[in-house]
Length: 310
Picture (cartoon, rainbow, N blue to C red):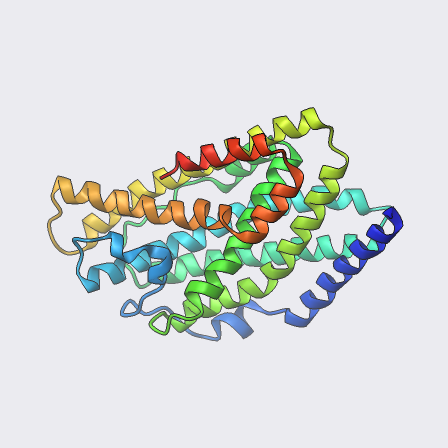
């Protein structure tokens, strides 16, 4: 049975390598193509920005919200891909003198994550060229990476699988079908999605492989660490929601009283929690994979923790 599983896994790694080569893209030639962003266009779709939650805003103001959130969306992905890449490189050591196909797949994964970080740095600067000055994203990606990588491999891989599954969900269900979005913004996440599709498969393979050698008591600790990582993500989201709401209030062109400011900040946080916590936690594949590795009690603990981020 182990031999059959090993062959099956090798084939899955190989398919990821083949798919990666097939969809390979270049930032300038394929994605940017000499274009820029237009402040007259929406960036993030209503299904992600939760535009309807901003009940006091006009249509133009909701478009501005979509642009702020779109910039933060790119920056959050650049942030998490810093620690994802470091973990992937660490995991590749397990295959140095073993499955060379798996090693090739993880090395390719790493190269693509570096490219994605470069793309999102470009997007941040390009959006900054067309929006008012004053936007801030002051979260240090290296500090976040050090903190995340201090947790167990199981916890980090569970969080990574969650993230890379919801990127696909966001693109297919919200970004791609929205005809009102900036075509450049859509293309950024089209090409990102093409490579993340392989990454999610590799995340699952590595998580299951790692879990197979984990003792029950260590998995129990890892579940708690996964919950701690989700709480840390929420802390980042709270801080950015405050920053982005303040930026909106300062640059929207009209006075915002204290009550409306609080409501706008709450709407930003609600959108960010949906984007980065709940949409991934509810993903059928994530639920299926995680449920296959943990006990019923551990699953209940995770669900109870997620329920706190409402």
